[in-house]
Image (cartoon, rainbow, N blue to C red; front, side, top):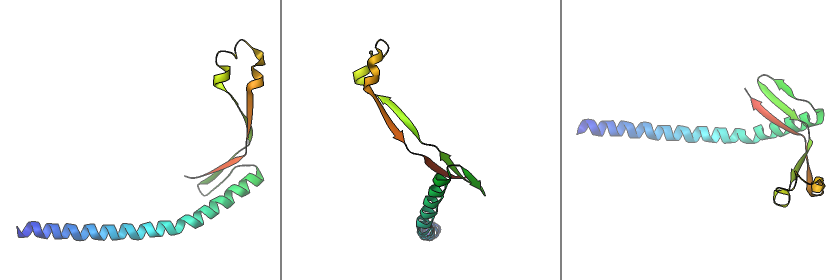
Length: 105
């Protein structure tokens, strides 16, 4: 029984050490979140202003130009669109602003 107690004690110590290390690393990661978010926001604003994608050191900021999104009220137009051109009266257009995505490869 002594051997199992020793093993359980070793397991407990390693487990507790691992939990403490995970908590320490978690705090470090949380400390990085705010500066990373600030830099990402600045990258997005800069790329939006430039109107073109950028890539450097394995980090890519992809520019996506704005466009008008068109959708239809499907309940009002179901079965009607094919036979009646006046369906355009139900047309709804939504403008989609330019956007930027940031990826690290």
